[in-house]
Image (cartoon, rainbow, N blue to C red):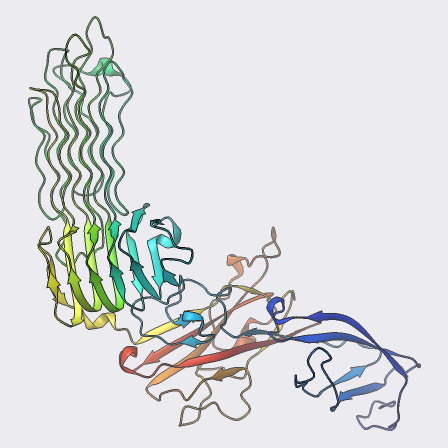
Length: 568
């Protein structure tokens, strides 16, 4: 004990105290990342007001539940009459993905490795595990509303007899570190347009597009059907997306002829609608063989309505347009083998109303949606079966003399691989085949954490694993961490052709929710962790940069990361 504050002990004797167990804290619920026991030391004597007391446990500690567990000796210095900072740490051992930001491209706990690996920059990071998920089943839905349509698997398999249906507003992107095998079926098709109704003014709705595809056109009437005349006829809605077909014309009267909807177009032009005086035109073609930008097909136009008569005063609504086929990207760092069905077909146009005998007048049909897009990029493509297609939907049917919808144009198919022979069936449309662009083999990947709450409103941070100016890992010429580095642990040396950079960002809590970081206070990423002092939330980014594509270099493997912090 130092009673005069000069930093030198002037008393070395046994002091009476009492130890009380407060809490046993386990790794799975504590940010420090290790099991420990929290105890309180209560002094049973009166210490001088400026005394410093050094408490050390040098050995002889035993874990009663498991005597074989080693307990690290420790020590602490206490200052009476003063409040000392509390030391704490955020430890990430990469053995789960609770802190993973999905924008990351490096491999964080892939295949439950318990590590962070630099990866190849191709085929995703495997965050979604393997497909199909545990539990079996034969029917699955991939909804692109989640994660902007991007799913990152360690491997992807659709067994024979199983079906996967893709839906949602965004193109479907299936990224896989391992092989992709489709023996069952994967469908990303546009949907059929609603059929027309007799003596019913309710507009019919176009078929939904496949993921990333355009919706079919709805039918008229407009808000004020009385505004339609021979001089100003009413037209049904056009299909969505760049190649959407035009809507068919509403007949002038109950004895007139309504026009069918024009078809959607994409890689090839669709067909026009028939009848109706002025046929509804198909949409224009668009895109390129590389399918860049990546987009689905276009919807067909809605069929024209037929005005009612004395007996049936309401319109007979036309059939609506079919939806455009979706867009499906399959990217694999292994082998792709498609022996089953893979489709991105356009939806059929809705049929016009038709009924024999004395009935409401018939109406026209909707145009078919165009085919969508299928793109496969892989280290090797082994087989593409004849069940792979991106064809247009058929035009809707109508009564004799009434307008029929045009059939949709074909979509686009693209196959890119690095090596291997390709067995390909009579795919429709014929695919564009090319070598995989080496630019997809990136020289950079990164891992980024979500915001981590320190539960300290004004934390001070420390990290000894990198240079605070450059952010580069502190390594010797052999790629081994320098002596004294304790806040990061690598497995094996880092290849000298790859650099590892550590970045940090801080933020304050939201005024309305103290458990969430406020984006408005985000400091942005910096190389010196001390620059984010005073913030309650922290996140990190680890960037792997190489002089050659990462796939050609040994992986960098990070086993553990620690960010130390203290607070009053």
